[in-house]
Amino acid sequence: MLIVICGATASGKSGLALEIAQRLDSVIISADSRQIYKEFDLGTAKPTIAEQNLVPHFQIDICEPTEVLTLAEYQQQTQELITNQTGTVPLLVGGTGLYLDSITKGLKIPRVAPQPELRSQLSALGQTQIHGWLTQIDPAAAKKIHVNDQYRTLRALEVFYVTGIPISDQQGENPPDYPILQIGLDCGVEVLDRRIETRVRQMIEMELVEEVKYLCDKYGHDLPLLNTLGYAEIKQYLLGEIDIEEAIALTTTHTRQFAKRQRTWFSKNKQINWFDNTNPDLIEAVWQKIEEFIAEQ
Image (cartoon, rainbow, N blue to C red):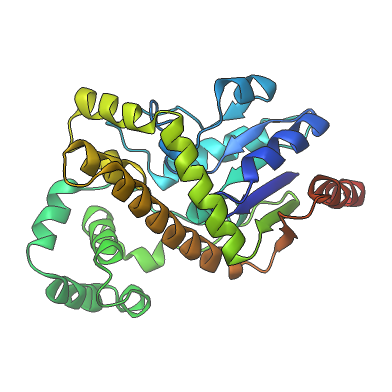
C-alpha cells in the first residue's frame, strides 16, 4: 500500500504528512525535485532536522548540488524504497507532479541521461528546425510536443540519437500492483496567495539570503540550481540588481505562478481525493479516509 499527499506549494503537505506518519508509525518519501539536493534547504522548504528526527525521511539530501538525478533514477530508487517497507504504509509527499506520476502511474521512462553537448548543438540550430527533424523521425512524439516546446523536443531527439529508438516507442505506463490512496490539499486562490507571501517572508527571516550567499560563494553564480525559484531572485539581490523588497515581491509572484501550474497539473488527476486545507478538522478528516482505505485492503 501507498499513501500520497500532494498539492501546490505552501498548501500544508509537510505538516499533514508529519502528523499522519506519526500516527501510522510510518516513513515519508519526498517527491520534491529540489529537496534531493544537499545544502538547498530554506528555499526548497525542506523539512527541518527536528522534523526529520520525528519521522524517517527518504529522498532528501541524496545528491550534491553539482550532480543530476534523472527521473528514471528517482523512480527506481523510490520504487525500491516503497517495496522494501514492511509492516507499515509509506507516505509519498510532494508537489513535483512528474515525480509523483512516475510512481503512481508507473511511467515508462527511457534510461537516457541528459546529453549537454548534443542539446547545445541542437539548440543552436533553432527550434523550428529541430522540431521539423522530430516530425520526420518520430511523428507520434512531434504531434504531442508543441512546436515551441524546446525542452521536450530536445529530450525526444537525444533519446532517439542515443538509443536509435523513437521516444514514443519507449513511453507508456505500467502502474504498480499495490493499492494507492492519493490525498490532495487545496484552498481558494486568495488563501493560497496569502500563504505563499507568508512563507516567502518567513524564508527571509530564517536567513534565506545567507543561504544563497553561501551557495554562490561555494559553487559560483552559474550553478543551475541557483537559477531556480527563490534562489534566482535572491541572487539578483546579492548581485545588486534589485533591492530586497523587490526580491521578495518577485519570489512571491513567481511562486504564485508556479503554484498555479501545479494546481493545473493535479486537477487532471481524477484519482486524487481533495481536502480543504483551511478545514479546522483537516487532520481528522484525512485520517478517517486513510483508516477506511486501510480497512478495505
